[in-house]
Amino acid sequence: MKMRVPLAALAATAIATVAVAQGAADLPDRPIRRAEVIDVVKRQFAALDANHDGVVTSAEFDAFRAKQAAGKAEVAAGPFGHVGGHWFERADAKGDGRVTLAEAEARPLQLFDMADVDHDGVISAQERKVATMMMSLGGH
Image (tube, rainbow, N blue to C red; front, side):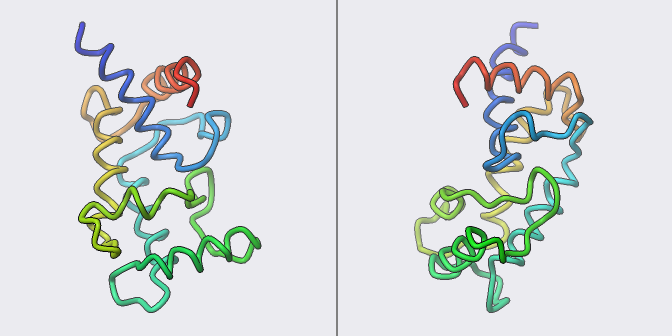
């Protein structure tokens, strides 16, 4: 049982990352499936990768963020669709100024897996509630 407390704290970070820049109130009041996160990341990546070469550059990211700010960017629908301002620096794991799909998926999935305390591929309503509570305590 003691392992659940640290995992619950990590769940807050995972939910925050999964929701990207959305507030806790915008999270769906339903279970969140790992496959849903993968789908959103793939759609976001496709929207960011303007020349469709399988790599998002900082220039593509900046152009996308400008479109997003103007309300002209096509992103995934729902609470996970917004691409945050720190996405590129967090996703560029190699620090080479290029983000691959594998890099784009790595952080959200790692954090999702930490939030998925029972490792069933779903952040249950209960896991989400704990994460939301931890986010509010942690000031996220």
